[in-house]
Length: 121
Ligand SMILES: [Zn+2]
Ligand SMILES: [Zn+2]
Image (cartoon, rainbow, N blue to C red; front, side, top):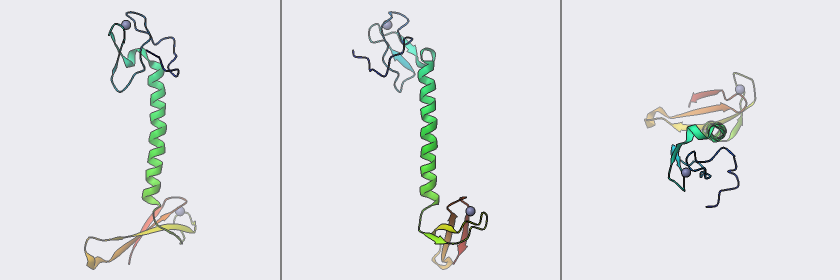
């Protein structure tokens, strides 16, 4: 068994037989390859748990920002003054309301402060 080079902590050994444990995967336990002793991930790898928590946080922040951008800043920019911060560019898009009689609603999003307003046409 070749241990991946990124996995090189001195504390990650089986408490039964002392052989190096494989990196934790999606499961809650890591099984020793030599003696099949199961070790709960939370008990034996404070370092790994911490690292993965940090990574998850970064991923979450990054993903939510991307999602927000694509949701709120869709559509072309127009010269429109934001009524909240006074910035003069806003993105806009139109959405057809449920009934065709009601016409379109135009949504504006300030690209600076993300203030949103809508206008019925
Ligand atoms: Zn073992
Ligand atoms: Zn604004």
